[in-house]
Image: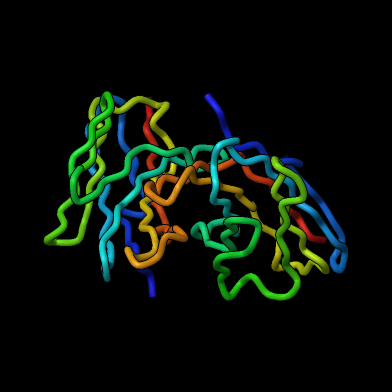
Length: 114
Length: 114
């Protein structure tokens, strides 16, 4: 059973469009939610959302956490071809553990056409 | 900016052979991880390592796998007798301290078992 569920699994848009990627998660003792961008190889860190930081923004990317409804969204405005990647959402093991294993969703494959 | 490095980038081996995948985590980080991603599937946790010992391992990390931190900088994953199903991308990650959940990933080693 997946702890982290992402949707849609894939998305194709044109440059300039705005996209919204979804991530729902389970929580026993919520710690944080992380977003990564995976291009050819390694996941690269985008945002970490916590109880004290439920909105993050960096340039055209922004993310919001809804702790009540147990989901997060990642928004990308004015998309560019360089945004084409798999976007991964991950939840660490619960608050009782400091060991930090991450549970990943299956990702959203975003393709931006010129 | 410091980053996690991994070698080799691609390893091809025959079934039954031993392989060692190498990682150099970010220098002031204390927690180290191995994950794998089978083609088309999600990133899966293998093992975490802290204070020179394994702190957590998944059900995937059986007796064929071992990890080591032989010196102050390297972190290795050994697969003793590779199977076809071990073919995957293996990512090393590191985390600075217990107070943060952000893990930084290396570029990965693609392991192909023939």
